[in-house]
Structure formats: C-alpha cells, structure tokens
Length: 237
Image (cartoon, rainbow, N blue to C red; front, top):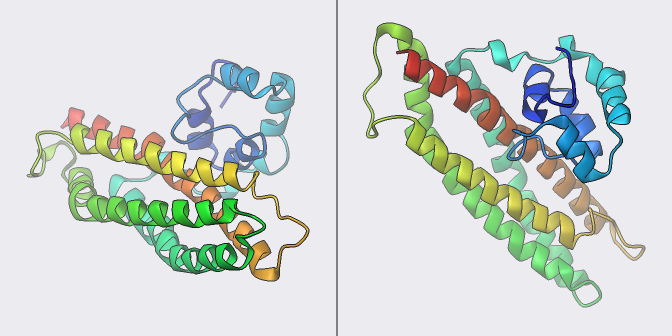
C-alpha cells in the first residue's frame, strides 16, 4: 500500500503487521487510538514524518510477506488465532507476572514504592482481561464464527440484535485495559530498571514490556481487523 500522511495508523498495521514494531519504537498507539492519520500522530509525538515513513518502508517493516495477512482471513480463522495465541498468552503470562510483581514489591517496595502500585495495577489488569476474554469466548466469538460460516445465507441466532452492541462494549474494555497498561508503563518510567534491581526485578520489567507488546497486537487485531470485518459481513447478510 502507498502510505501518506493521511493514511490511518491502524490501516498500515492491518496491511503489514510488522509495522507494529515501528510504531512501538516511536511510542505511537496503533490499537485503541489507531484510527488516526499518520501525519497527526507524528506531529503529536514530535516525530518527523519523513523519518517515520522511512522506518515504515525499510528493514523489518518492509518484509510483509513473512507474516500473516490477517485482512484476508475468515472470521472463524481470525477468532481461533486470537484465542489460541493472544488469549492463551495472557493466561500463560499473567500468573507469572502476578507472582513477580508482588515479589519485587515486597522486596524492593521500600526503596521503590511505585512497585507496590505496579503490583496492584497489574492485578486489576489481569482480572479485567480474564473477565473480558471469557465474555468474548462465551458470547461474541461463537456468534462471529457462525456469522462467518453463514455468509449471505442468513444471520445466526444470538441474544442481541446486532454484533455492534457487544463489539462496542469490548472496545471500551480494550481502552480500559490499555489505560491500565499505560499506567504501569508510566509508574515504571518506561520499564527502566534501576541499578539496585535484582534478577527477578529485571526479568519482571522485561515480562511487563512483552505483555504490553502482545496486548497492543491483540487489541489491534480485534479492533481494527476482526470487528470491522464482522460488522461488514453482518450488514451484507
């Protein structure tokens, strides 16, 4: 695709998921706030647009052929990928991070009181994400899979008039989770490890960084690929 200052950030990542790494590096939101022009976000972040365009057209970001083209996938395949990869990652990473954030808060909290807040914030985030994923897996996602299979042959039965209602709720919850993760980043000073950090401290901050990266990709895939496709297919049916 031809990228200009008017191209939305979410569209760039939807077309080429590798571009997400570039936006992460420049601190540009491509998930919840991705529906904004590249020129606008570059000015807000104080990044020269030519530098951003160059980064998006070179290196890893240009190797789009080596990653899945999610925009071509069916609804069912997208749902299965999200559950098997991103939902599974949250459930695998959360218990470890809960243990580590609590441990470093207990050991280092006297010298670094922000760790106590980080531990409490991550506990809230983990609980919110588990409830959120359960609602998706039990209510919305089964409907979307049936919708994809039905195509133009009719709309599957559900406890709601349209997917628009639950999708809007899921997007609000995504924004809330993103805000909770942003608070953790701010409290940790962008996951900066102090000189007196032990091995667990260092590992925990890297785990939080990895968790944030996956969360951004997770939310982008739902907000900017899965949900728009679902509403499109529902309307067409």
